[in-house]
Image (cartoon, rainbow, N blue to C red; front, side):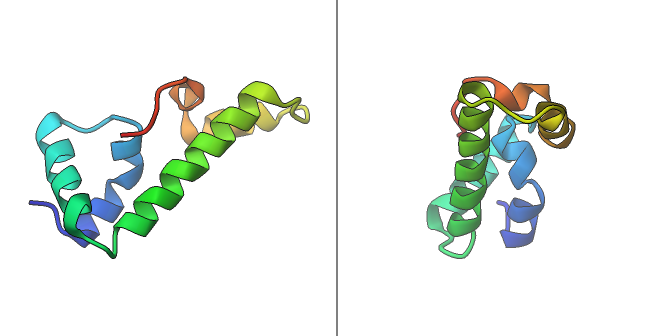
Length: 83
């Protein structure tokens, strides 16, 4: 079972669906009961969703989309919803 440190360290990889199934299950179990980690998860999931939506709908300044992709990766702008 994941603890708070492990969960927060893997949060971005969890949201990007880059973790093995066993680790995903451990983190999901932890998030279901940990009121300390839930706000961090919700914040990062919402932030990724908002940036993805803005990048797809709004006109962006030159070079900004490349910077977003450099930070979050190309798959970040896909329409997949966070876990």
